[in-house]
Length: 111
Image (cartoon, rainbow, N blue to C red):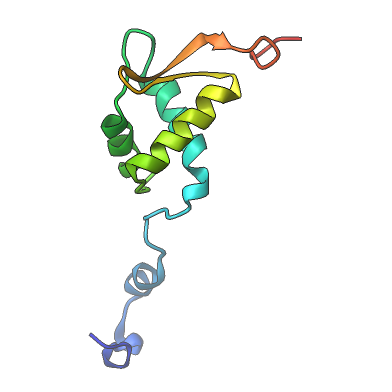
């Protein structure tokens, strides 16, 4: 369907709103480290580790809705593991959030 073939004048307000509403797909991959951190914090722990494919599947679902390649995710996990935010990443065992791994100056409520 060509834009010239759309009859805008006969569309209802709801149809017009839906027509111009942005897609839910979030292509801002710069937010991937933050999204991965949230996923690990919510869905993992020392006894429940997530594989890269698990994390990729979570990223593809609502509310994140981004696609990321495995190599890019590996870089994000390495970055998060070095950040001191409590993320542990091991190529053999997966990645998880462990509050005991947070650096003292970053802990919530620490003075």
